[in-house]
Structures are given as structure tokens and as C-alpha cells.
Length: 259
Image (cartoon, rainbow, N blue to C red; front, top):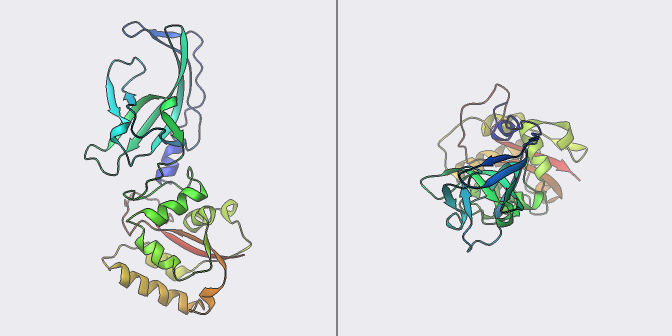
């Protein structure tokens, strides 16, 4: 698969231990230990959004790449850690990269002291187009749906099920059909829905919502039945995605689980 979350997996290079400290003579910083664990990495955001906090191009500390104070909507994805010694003191730095949802020069990748960061996605999702289901929490995913201006169709669909809740795990199941994400025994999937959601179209959100309601009605989820309590799995990207997907991968997904 070539989904973003699975591409992150390829970044997992294992644990790297440096037997002898490496000193950058020009800066006086010594790499004591480094680690690049496998997996999807962790998300961080600025601990103090108003504080100057710099991302450096390398561990040598010779060039500042960005000041995260200037990236108020950005979440920082960490894939590695180093311990640096400077002036006889150790400090932990994270290898981070980020794509700013608002800046023209979007991609930033470098090193930052971990004290400047706080664990989790940036809670301001208003300008964010998508987040990873593999490294977000259930709470973060719900906040993203509630706040993002790109998630209006998702909100409209969920409004059809006023007594139901969204599950991040089941949303992942809606995309990948991985049994470990099937958090309830009974999950309804819809071939017609999968077909519609995974073919690009130029319909308006209202036209898309009408089509989705038609599919739900055809499968017995009429207005009355939709008032029941369900667990919803949903992942929509506003019908915008890259075509670089393997056959069988889904771009968007929707399933209904019975509590």
C-alpha cells in the first residue's frame, strides 16, 4: 500500500546506537545516542505557541530552518530521537517534519529540542485537510471532523445519525477492512457506498449527500432507523486524493457498527 501512514512505516530504520560519541567540531555538539524506531511515528505541537522555538537543519546547530512560533496550525511528526551533549549537558532532540496547512513553503524537516513540544496533534484543525488514523487519538480525530473546513460533508453525514458516535478505529476499518479495527461484532458495509466514495466526481456536497442518503435508504437505513445508536466509521477527504494507490485500496470509507 502507498497510503501516507504506510509510507511512514518505511521510515522505521530500527534502533541506531552510536558506540562512540560523534562531535561536531564547528558547533561543540556531540551525538551521544540516536534512535529511529519503526512504526508510524508520533505527533507533537508547540508547547508554547508564542515562544521562539527553532528547528535546526542538522544536529550541528549551525543553521535555523524554522521557528515553530510561525507555524500556528502545524503538527510536527517525529520519526527519530538523538541525545546531544553540549557544554557537558545532555539534551534530547527530535527529528521532525511537518507540512504547514497555511504556508506557501509548506514542508519543513529538521531537529528540535523536545522541551519545545507537547505530545499530540495541534488542537487547531480548522485549516487541516487530513490527519493520520494511525497516530491520532479518538479524541483528536473527532476534533478534526468538528473543526476542519474540509470536513463539512463528514459532518452532514454524521448529522443523519444524531444518536451515534464516531470511532477512529472503525474509521480505519472503513478504509482497510483490518479485523483488528473492527471494535464491534456487527458492522454493515455497503458496496454501492464504497464504489461511490472511491470514484472522483465534481458534484457539490449537497449532491453527494443526496446520493449517500439514497444508498442508505436502499440498504434499510431510512430516517427512522438512523435514529438508533450506532458506532460510525467514516473517513472522507472531500473527494480529493492522489492516484498513487494500489488496486484494492480505498480513498474514502463509511461503515456502520451496531453497539
